[in-house]
Length: 233
Image (cartoon, rainbow, N blue to C red; front, side, top):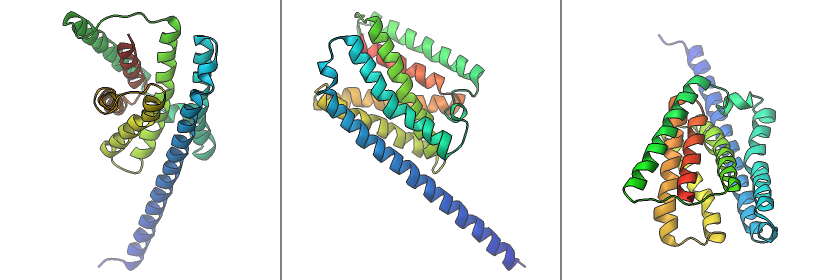
């Protein structure tokens, strides 16, 4: 015979778990909405502020400062003061360092071989890229990975399956680049929905899978840098 007290206790536990899940969903949804609003505002202001700066270095410094404040700082504040957790561990920046290193090395070698094959087949060509450009690609990739694959993917994985979390994160990653593609770079519809869009979506999926497999954010950061580097030269 089933104990009514035990049934009641299990029901209470389930109610608490569902309530906690609902709170997490609401919290991450609010975070994402606020982030999107602030970043779109930033993209609009880019045309007013950054483009009037005198040198590429000043523009780069301004770009990274804005990106750090909008993409990275809120993540560290949220994890530190709301979740009260180890920020670097949660973002997988201090976990599985050895495994992350080997996965990162594998991604780097894969990218190098892929680039050589593309050059050999005439599918790509080497262009010039400045030191400032290399620094921009690296820092930008790091900041974006901390938010997307480090924070948002982890948060969504707490309230749904990893596959659904990865799909949502990849759509968000694609969506957050739309304002810049439209307002700053004036991409065509073909570039937005086929070329750049598909590349960014696939890279996001690949980065998320790497994070899940290696339990480290570094392989995804390397993949992101390689993608940005190849598409920029």
